[in-house]
Image (cartoon, rainbow, N blue to C red; front, side, top):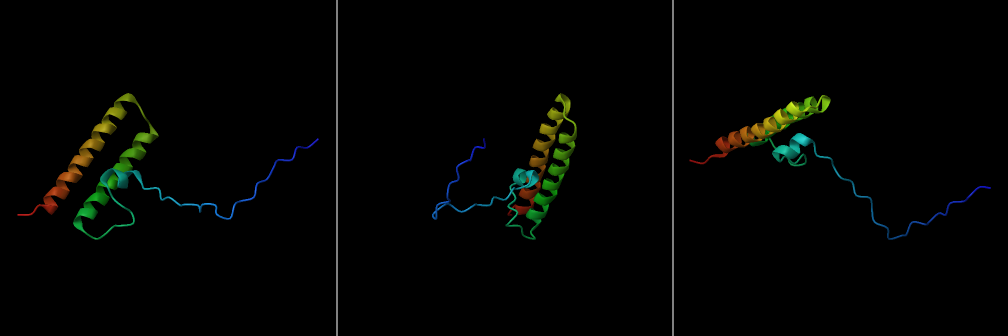
Length: 94
């Protein structure tokens, strides 16, 4: 005895499928919009910091532990601080 599952028609006014871009961890960390990258020095600094964050994250995910977790969090904080300080120097007006 086979059971037939009911089927439901898709309404004509059904919502469209919305695609979402997945923004990489490093880009999120330094506030980069992948759709709005330019050739400025600030963007270059942020891209370098984002790349460092990605390397850090992939290394952390490969082998976690209490000490590595503590160092990971500290390294991310220092990375963000360094990136912000460099951007501040670049954008400082006299």
